[in-house]
Structures are given as C-alpha cells and as structure tokens.
Amino acid sequence: MTAVDYRGQTTLITGASAGLGAEFARRLAARGSDLVLVARRGPRLEALAAEVRAHHRVRVHVVEMDLATDRPGQALAARVEGLGLNVTSVINNAGFATFGPFHQADPQRLLQEIAVDVTAVADISRAFIDRLRTAGRGVLVNVASMAAYQPNPRMALYGATKAFVLSLTEALWEESRGTGLRVLALSPGATRTEFFDVVGTMRAAGGSRLAAPSDVVRTALAALDRRNPPPSVIAGRLNRVMATLSRRLATRRQVIRTIGRLTAERA
Image (cartoon, rainbow, N blue to C red; front, side):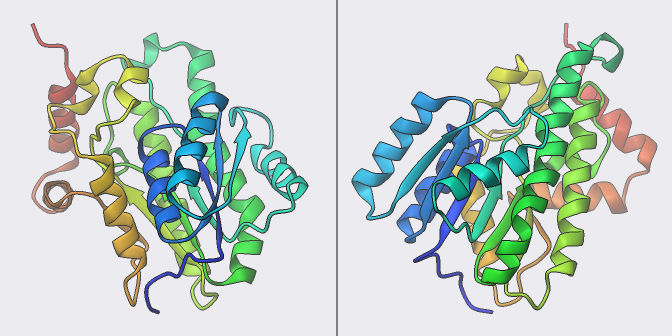
C-alpha cells in the first residue's frame, strides 16, 4: 500500500464540532476529501464548514445529530443517503467521559456515555463498513485512548469503553485485510481539546502534559499512509513508552494503584 489518496473521497467525521474531529476535518480537506461533519452543535459545524470551504475546494455537508440515540448508525446512513453521498471513509471521533467514583455517578449519564462511546462507534462502523470495503480506498478510524490500556480508577467506565473500541477496531483491521480499506484505532493521551471542560476537572489528565490536536491527527494520518498500516497507534512518544513499560515492567496491581494515585484528589 502507498499513501492514502483522499481526492474524490467523502469522509464522515463524528464529533466534528471541536478538538480532534475539527482537526481531522481541516487535514483531510487539505488533502482533497469532501466532508460530512456530524455533531450535536449545528452552529459550530456550520462555522467549521464555512472555514473549510473558504480554504479548500471541497464539498462540506453538515449533519446535526445526537449520537446518544437508538441505532445512530442506521439513522446517520439514512441521512447521508438522503444527501446523495457515497461515503468512502469514516472517522468515529465522538466521545466523552465522566469523572469520579463509579458508585457516585449519575446512572443516566453513564448510559449516555456507553451510548456515545460504545454503541455509536459499533453501530456506525457496522452501518458503513460494507460500503467502505467495497470502495476499497478509504479509511475507518475509531478514536480510542491511552485509557484503553489499563483500568482507570475514577474514570472506570471511560477506560472500559475505550478498551472496547481498541479491541473492536483491531479485530476489524484483520477482517478488512485485502479489501483496500485501512482500519486504525487511534489512542491519544491527554490532549488540548474541550474534553476536560466536559469532564469538569483537569485531574482526569493525571498530571500529563496536554498534546496538540494537530500532533495527534498527524500521527494517525502518518500511520494510515504506511506501506503496511498497523491496527492501532498511540499518539505521543512518551505515551508509547509508558504503555510498553506498564505491560512489561509492572504488575496489574501496580498499574491500577499508580493510575489511582494520579487521579486522586490532592489536598
């Protein structure tokens, strides 16, 4: 395989109103892809669409949609078909986290977290993967997290959802070999986005330095452009080192206790 040619493609991006989603939109438009931008905040999507159109000769469509609904993949596919579009690439970026002891969490908020971080990723992947495999020239990127690589006290559900995304996507990578579709699980560490505004505390970063969204997206696109793209990639050299060390040099008990101390409330 050679570098992905996005010219003439149509890429659907969820969670496109800010952060990594918006950065993916800018980068892929610069490489020639038409876009379908999906998120709850319509005005933010329209502003991004206007920005992209002003800088690149691509078509940009906006779909205002809450993914915490029943069968979001089917609903999104119907919306796309109604626009007469042939989606060839998908970036499943939408997601959010809750922070705090699991036993104190709002049950309804936890269900919403599962709906967006797990159900929507699986349902959208299933709704579009047949056409992506048939097109055979695009990508399916599911955004996981460094949180996928170990349990996360005080973000227990979020870590579990991202472990699901990582496992699912790596399996789809194997199933899609030979079709021309490139599948990748992207695992950022703490990144300078609105993620922590939604979580409500910087304690969720565990003291990590925040990465720039541009660096994270650059890592993903570089991995997809490889001659033999990997099933997953961790953004950030230090994050890759830490993930390796935690698996090889520490016990499971030690890893969990360390993460717990990093996110504990400090006096």
